[in-house]
Structure formats: C-alpha cells, structure tokens
Amino acid sequence: MPSKVIITCAVTGSIHTPSMSPHLPVTAEEIADAAVGAAEAGAAIVHLHARDPKDGRPDQSTDAFAPFLRVIKQRSDCVINITTGGAATMTVEERARPAQVFKPEVASLNMGTMNFGLYPMLNRFKEFQHDWERPYLEGSRERIFKNTFADIEHILTSCRENGTRFEIECYDIGHLYTLAHFVDRGLVEPPFFVQSVFGILGGIGAHPEDVAHMRRTADRLFGTDYRWSVLGAGRNQMVVAAIAAAMGGNVRVGLEDSLWAGRGRLAQSNAEQVTIARGIIEGLGLEIATPEEAREILSLKGGDRVEF
Image (cartoon, rainbow, N blue to C red; front, side, top):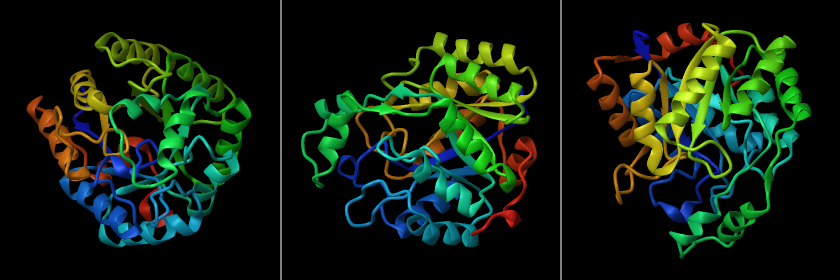
C-alpha cells in the first residue's frame, strides 16, 4: 500500500457539453479558477482541455490553452497535465500540438482506437444551449476515436525531447498490451503512469471485477515499473475511486469525467469532487500526495522546465 495517493482532477473536457451543467468551466478564467480550486482542495495534478469561450466547443489550439496555463502556473504549484486526446473529431496533429509547444510535465495519451459512445446522454438531456452539442453526442453512434499505432508513436516521438511524461489512458485490457508494445520498443520509460478508465460505452465496464482485472493485468505486464490510477465515468466515479484506493491505486476525478456529486445532484465545482475523493482516501487511513510528492512518485521534470 503506497504511503501517498495522487489525486488528479480533470477540470474540463470534451466528454461533456456545456449545457449539461452550469458548473462546467468554459472560459479561460473559469478553467484557471477551477483548476486552482481543485488544487487547493487536494489535487496534485490538474488535467486540462480547452474550449471556445463563446459556445464551449472543444478547442485544441495553443491560443486557447495559453491564457489559463500561465495563470494556473502563477497561482498554484500543481502539476499541469495537457490533453493529447482533445476530441474524437480532431486530427492527431491538432491533438498533439499543445503538448509539443508548451512541453508540460505530463500529457495524456490514449492507448487505442475505440468506439466512444456518448449518445446515451441524449436520453437524459433534452435541452441544449448550443447548436453543436446534440449532433456531437449523436455522432458518437458511428464515430470512432482514432488512436492507431502510428498516432500513438507520433505523439510519443514528437514529445520525446520535451521531458514530458504521459498519463497513459487505458480504456480496455488490450490497451495495456499496446502500452507493453511501446515499452518493448523503448518509446516509453518507467515509471509508467497508467490511468485505467472504467464505464465508457465502448471500453471496459465499471464492475469491481473489471477494476481488479485491470490491476492484475497491469501488475503482470509491468510489475513495479508503473503507477496505477483510475477514473470512473459518470455515476461510477467515486465507487471506482474507492475500490482502487483500497487496492493501493491513485484516483482521478473532475467534471470532465462526471458531472455528479451524488445521486441526482450536480457537483457545484471540481473542488467539491476532489474533496469527496479526499474524504474516501483519508477514511481508508491514507494520505494524499502534494504536488512535489507527485513529482517524485512519477519522476517528473519539474514545473520550472515547462514552456508556459
């Protein structure tokens, strides 16, 4: 059992559309405030997407990221993790660009092409503020989230000289084997930060046996060379976090992954979800990691070596 548990907070992202919650940060100022609030609540790492401030549409341009990256760095010592996932509608070149330019300590990296079904949300949400939101969700019936071997290699090699480490997002068991392939080729070096994702339609489920299966497989493939973290999508968020924390894992929460803070109750902020996760962790007799402790655990280069 580790002495410290890393909390990552996924502050905002492309999974949820703005109309689904009035608490989802959209503008650069809102994203910066939300990230700092999450860090103050106990998140050592903040995982960041960007949005068009006019309508909340996913935006992977460097101009969209720059304003809040600088503000967060000025106001907090948290580790900043920039997405290379972006949205399934973007090219891999678009998705990789912010990490290439800003050279963060951590960037996310999806480990496989998959169906990524968001359309069931249409059964729960009927009114949308922006005209792009409904088609975006409906389009996930036939849209593939493309992460080919060539795409993954492009992101790994284009960021290789930056000293950036990766939050390696594994939505299914096969993604762990894909990671092992790139480890064997020398393109990823330990310690690997493996983020197991549960409850996305198209990936592994969120049953406790699914969580255990992911952990067993990663243990067998990587031994002591990896650090395990989990995220549960939607209503699975805190259940999966509790299971994994009890198994010695780290946890990720945040409004990108779930809008909820309890049955039928929207989370008022990312900080609220971090506070709930912290309570679970400390209730198990564990301690949360500070940003500096997270840097040591994950062998990060340090916040003084980023380009923002």
